Structures are given as C-alpha cells and as structure tokens.
Image 1 (tube, rainbow, N blue to C red):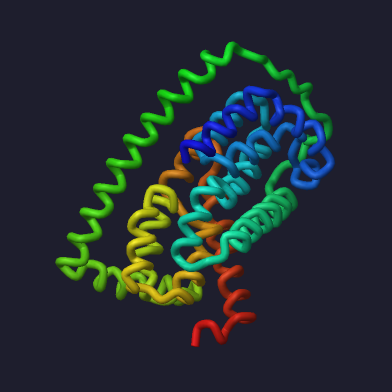
Image 2: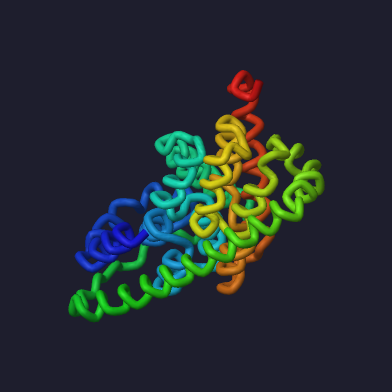
Length: 279
C-alpha cells in the first residue's frame, strides 16, 4: 500500500492526474458525470475509498453524480492491493481487475439510466492544478500513511485472534450453517461463509491476512475461493465503505443493493460458463 500511495501522491503533485482528466469528458458523460470525475475514479482505483471521498469533497459534484461515483468506486477501488489478495487466494489478477473495472462501468451506466433526476453533466468545470511546496504535500502523506499502518496492524492482529477463537469454539461451523441459505442464493459454497463475512464486514485489504490464511490452509478449495472472489470483487466491505459515502449524503439503498445484484449475476454467469470447475 505504501509504494502505491506514494506513487499516486507524486502523480497528483506533478499535475498528471489533472492533465489526464481533460481527455475523459466524452466517456464520463455516458455515465452521467463530468470529465473531472476521473480524478475520483483514479484515486479510488489506485488507492482506496478514503481517497475517493476526499477527492469528491475537494470538487463540486451534484448528489446524483456522487451516488454514481460512489457505486463505481465501491466496485473498483484499491485494485492493486486487493487484487494481490485475490491472486493469493486463487484468482487471476488480470481477470479480477478487468472484471471489477468492467462491472463498475456497467453499474455506473445503468445507475445513470435508472437513478431519479436528470443528468446535468454537460460542461466540465475548469481544472486548475495548484502546485504546493513538496514538503507541504509530503508531510501530510507521511502522517496519514503511518496512521494507516497502525490501523492495519491492530485490525489484522484482532482479526487473527477472532478467527482462532471462532475455530476453537466451532463458531465458524455455526456461522456456515446460518449463512447457508444466503450463500446458496448468491451461488456460493457454504465453505466460503467465514471468508464472505470477513470480506463484507472488514473488507479485502483489512481482512487480507485471514483470507489468505484460510485459502493456504485448505479450508476452502481453489475453485471455491475463485468463485467467491467473483462475488467479493464486486461486493465487499458493505459496512465501513458504505458508511463513508452515507456520511457525505449518499443513500445506502443505491450503493448496497446494486452491488449485491451485480455480484449475484456475475457469479451465476460464471457458474453457467465454467460449471466444470465446480465439479
């Protein structure tokens, strides 16, 4: 996470992201957005939801535009780190990135069609890149990165402890039975219940240690993990990431149910064309 964050900070500081945004207007309008929305999507894709929310608040978007951006960012964010986790749990990194970006574009396009209100994304605002002294950018980045590392360490330790407690008292087995009807609806194996819960409550980045450990210990097969990845690639962190956008005025309905529906459709399409993998 650190080198990716540093690289994006440099790209932002150099003005490259603002320059690139000037060429994205025509595509953005198909999604009901303006050209500068690429800044949000890039910061989300290369970093995380926190950076996307910060970028949204630094620009002027309508509530409708923010809702579309929120859905797209929730599907395709933190791609480098989270794709690494999914690769370690049995999926193709290239396919996971392609899937997430593709579904994010489809989701944004469809949401633009059905979302109440009319798109006003016709004229982009003038983009002005302000070049601050490097140290005024570097010091806040260092502080935020150190805090991010501290949170990651605390969460990973806590999650590993929780997982061992659940294994010791057979809570995982109980949860598997409880989640069985839901997972069957989503087309997922019941063995994936614990990993599904971790991915949706904590997320891929925070829960990576446990997700990788579960896969490496053989508690879920490679084909089952790959199937699960097709779901959680599109819909994960339903709690924390959703609340971040709710905090800036986005309706939870428009960013939870579309993700779950798109994830459900993706898994069943995958099962239809790759049914032999599950045998």
